[in-house]
Amino acid sequence: MEQRRLHQPRIGILIVAYNAALTLQRVLDRIPVSFRQRTTKVFICDDHSHDSTYLVGLGYKQLTPELPIEVIRNAQNLGYGGNQKLGYRLAIEHDLDIVVMLHGDGQYAPECLEDIVAPLERGEADAVLGSRMMEKGAARRGGMPLYKFLGNRVLTTFENTMLGTSLTEFHSGYRAYSVRALRSIPFEQNSDDFDFDTEIIIQFHSAGLRITETPIPTYYGDEICYVNGMKYAKDVCLDVIRYRLGRLGFSSGGLVSPAEELYQLKDDPSSSHSRIIRWLTQMPPSRVLDLGCAGGYVAELASRYGHRVTGIDVIESAGVRGRVAQFVQADLNDGIPPSVGGNYDIVLAADVLEHVRSPERLLDQIDRVMVRGGVLLASIPNFGHWYPRLRAVTGTFDYDERGILDRTHLRFFTRRSFLRMVRSNGYDVLRSEVTGLPVSTLVANRRLSSILGRADRALVAIRPTLFGYQFLYELRPRMREMATARPDALAESG
Image (cartoon, rainbow, N blue to C red; front, top):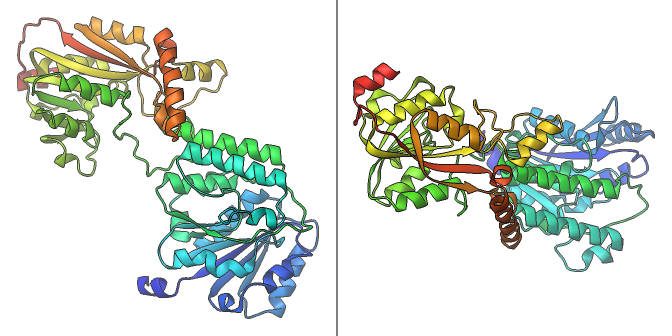
């Protein structure tokens, strides 16, 4: 099977059509003979047209039996994006390897089909976008109106800036996809409107899939345009912003790929992880217990400064044992397992206490595994941040995939409630810091990220309880009877 696909991929053509009775036949006629011979399926998806588009498709199928056409008439109008979803489902159901989209109105040249699918056939890409902007001046020479040209350039520049991409055009509807790649992204969650094309690019980018472009000719004739330009521009901008917010944990509607690890290293210089590492560099080489170590990335950095780190997490992430001195798989809701021992100089609870049912009980156990004079380095998200407040006030409160409203958080803390909890559990605060939004995650462009970062830090300095994204604390237990930990003490407290 794999050898067949490598040398003879199953290629499908998806023709999205709406009121295209006058142009559909010409589009089909222009499919190159050489490409027809390599085509496994042609899906003509008539989106409940008011004209005879469906009948034209059926007639062409009868007159051209050598072209494997399947004509579908939607029972109701699904929208441009909804019609594509139907086509991609059909490509998956028919076990195709490549699907290339054409428009039934003839705006895109079928003569370029072989150029569009070539990078996919060579295994060089997962998506190929036809671009009218790759050749300087070609779009205007092809008849693209000036206002559309300028709008295209402005939107594409904005999208590249926000996403960190370098595409010449986001807004061409001529494109081909690897069906295997389509299976891996939640395209069904996308818009049914014209911004579907932007959302699927975002999903491919988010999943780390390969996107390439190929030049295509520009054609503007007497076809009817159903796109509301202002609404389209607004929707596209909101999609990009929603994706960037989704990287922070705010709702993304499926634009942030599951392939982006939820609990990865926060390498922004102002992030909680970076600041904790900075604190660790100021401490002598120590025995460290990292609670909720995830992939062990913080532990790996800490070990470079002489620290010996034991990590605990409920899931064993790939490669974690190579980043920590010792790994113990355990659910902290059941307590710190006795097998980790005691006498730790430092315990890390970076974004952990909000994930357990009883952080008070965990704080007591942390006290018992530390040596006299040991410290706890903890970071927590600030539920008093403007974002959760806004969601609550507007009646739109819900959980997100990550960030402050991470759906796996069992407890929420403000600065006041957290300090009340740790002090009542016998801890004193040695130092504290507050972080702002991880702006580099929000905006890919470095210059813009720097400007926004400075503005956010200024707001954090003015009112940390409203603009602070996370609070960090170095905490030390007050004097206790047990100066060092005993395994039986852990068992008793569990």
